[in-house]
Amino acid sequence: MAGHGSTVFTPLLENQRSLHSLSVLTMGQSAPTVTQMMDRFQQRYGGFRAGLPRSEQALFDRLLVEGHRHSTSLNSHPELDFERPLFLAMLLGVLERLERDREHVHRRLYELESRLPRQQEAEPVAS
Image 1 (cartoon, rainbow, N blue to C red):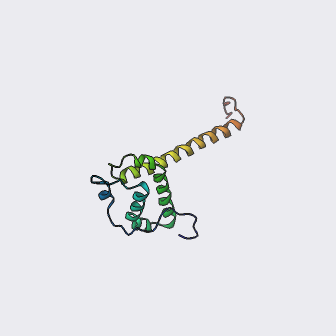
Image 2 (image 1 turned 135 degrees about the vertical axis):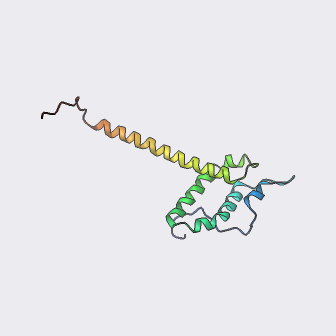
Image 3 (image 1 turned 45 degrees about the vertical axis):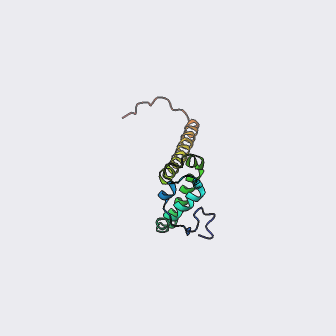
């Protein structure tokens, strides 16, 4: 992906443990960081990402950015498996963006409609 701007997707890690096994901690172990979990997520879904068209790979990377943006929430519940909250964080990011875009379109529509001359009540058309 060199030459295509910055990318979030990192090379695969050597560690092959599953995400689920990381969520089961024994006494004295510390929870993995969100960054470590994101790296493992990227490793796990690397094959899926590689099979996507280049344009969708970029979208996949943007979803990861949205997920990482919610790292505080992801970090605050290490007892949950990582993937479900990550997927929810990704969806929240997408919904937030859709809502911002929807509001922008509504504001712009109102602005454009307010520039149109006000029409009187429709006059009957002579036949």
